[in-house]
Picture 1: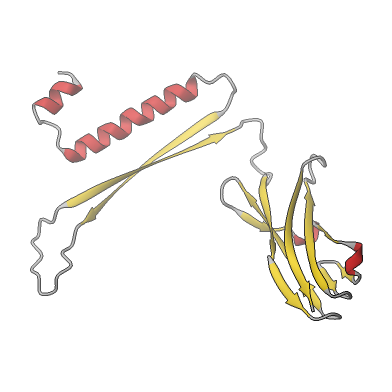
Picture 2 (picture 1 turned 180 degrees about the horizontal axis):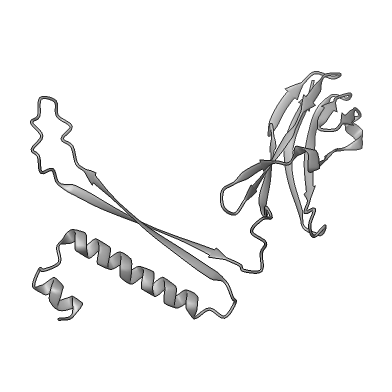
Length: 178
């Protein structure tokens, strides 16, 4: 009996349909990944969660068999086998604060966070170079800028990949000195 016949004869209910759809989609994704010649490994995770619809009105008697909704989530992660899994691969960096105001002669501390492709983040402040235009005056004490001249200045945080030494990330912030 084909899958189409099963649907036509209503042997498969909605929950089975959801599971079957998930399996078929997984197979299709796997075929696409296997047909790839770039050597990348694809991992597909299928998660199903049932939720019960509860009436909103007060003083409502809830029957024991509430209608449920099944949510299917499919996540695909493609891994490059040439990458070292013990190394943190930076996707982008973020300087904080993005905007700040201080009086001339006061200082502002900046921090930098690196984010990878899997949603992890790490403080890389100690590995960054901080830059402000020479006209701003003042001086840097590591990640703390001690201001001198009044103005609106752009602060840059630069991060070089310590492994390759060639990859470079930059993020910027605005510092207003009154």
